[in-house]
Image (cartoon, rainbow, N blue to C red; front, side):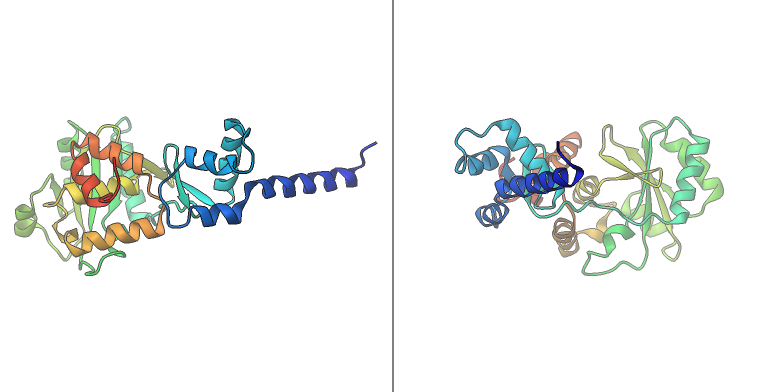
Length: 260
């Protein structure tokens, strides 16, 4: 009869055996400075130890490696060494209240909100002021603009850089209303829809006029730090870039030495 103590020994030994089969140290050495790593790359690696290893076993091992922080997903079926680091910006109470106020007025509207302050930490030249970017589904921009203009100052609808230079009060927070691209990658923070880091990077690259203060060496620094401190999903980033019809431009800017 299997006692509780015996079961604990069995479970512990099972864990040791499965960990041993992962060959973590060798895997780290094998794929050091290599990215991306495909499922086939990992499959070939484990075939060296067991030529009859099954794909289902490899999928289990990949999940185990991800959960233990050995590798991280950077796209569909592609990985790199390191622990998954999700982009979780600090959502201010002011932005949270502003979003909830908009959802109360427009409950069925797709809305996203973020602050350029989130990426300023990665810049070489820190701006003196930040913009709050509110994106809403196409056709609702004007309604949102008029609503916010009644309760907030410094609100602009799809402004050009020239308009901001002439009419924006740079000593106060600036709120910009713009169109939300269909199927743009978003995430939830405190029940508030905010853009994923992949979306923010694409927008900074594409909307050069709106984000003129975030170009040049500052944009290079933002991209470099974004990849260093966060897990960026390549397929998500390029799919959104394609939605904006700027996939070649974005790919050239970010993945210069890789094939799409």
